[in-house]
Length: 224
Image 1 (cartoon, rainbow, N blue to C red):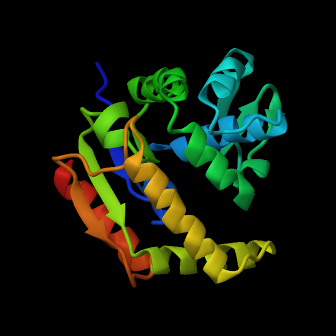
Image 2 (cartoon, rainbow, N blue to C red; image 1 turned 90 degrees about the horizontal axis):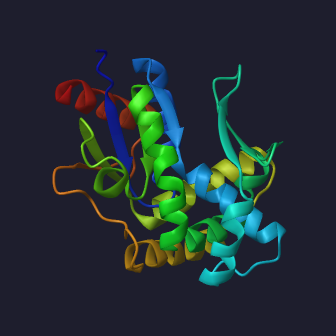
């Protein structure tokens, strides 16, 4: 029976998890699963329907209407299909970030998406990134990494990323949003953001992308 490997990468918003995980998956020949995109899709749906993401009962009532699929395009990227519509680009808008953070704190939403995430790891070797992959989603992962960086460094990266995309936002606003997201993610009752006890904690403050990539790749190869 074929053995599939699972690499869990957790950490706060803006730590570079998605970009690094995508590049590492390509290097290792694994499937990359961006769990943040899954929560963003639910947040996007709530916003479309005019539902307050902090209203647990209202968000929970939307779940039976949500059909989510993950497809991998020829561009090698994970595309999110929400009720038949490709929302990959829309879910990356800055205003969706806080929606995603709020809906991901709702236990019913986490339970709704948990099986979808675990199913991927049963059928592929995966690199999965998020907030609670090593602690809740894949507690048996072969490698658990916790990626962190200072809030200032993360806000600076986000600032440059949005500028590159042509949707710039003021640095101070991004820093405040980053701090608010950190507060939400670490203080929520359902699966708060924390490093798994057996996770390797890696601080990438001040690193270039290549430095972080080399550090993570070396750590994964040592563990596997």
